Length: 192
Image (cartoon, rainbow, N blue to C red; front, side, top):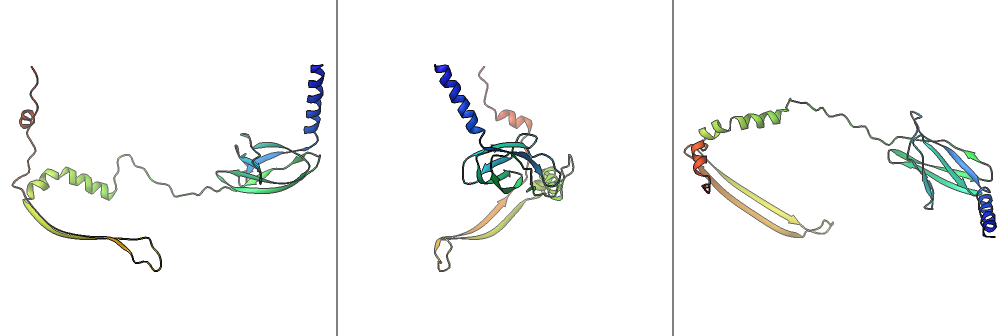
């Protein structure tokens, strides 16, 4: 008895699904006609959706009625089509336009440096000579920082004003790096 009821239920469920139409087709690139895999196909205004396979094929079962179906992919502009479904199967290919923005390439070199990098490398290489020839220097500096409130047409609120005046002097007889012997002296004694 249970088998008979189950059989009748499955038979009715199968005939219910067969009463609608099937919409199938492919999602393709507009320019190259290449398949667009993993495109989202969604009934607008609902959460019902499916994905195209790697070859761009999709298949949807539709009950009779009018549908707006949105085809989208992260690399393409979306396309919306309107379908009037009855009990007949429909075939519809959709072509999506690429939304990829082409930017100019960047050259990457294995050993070459731009002008700023060459200046930095040369300064590092000449550090000892430069510091050895520099005996002293001084400078005066003044800075002012104004932090304003949120911008509005009639708002002139100032939250903070800071001013700093600085005079600095540096005097060095000679720059030398520690000798290996000095580095040995500065180490902690080993526990022997």
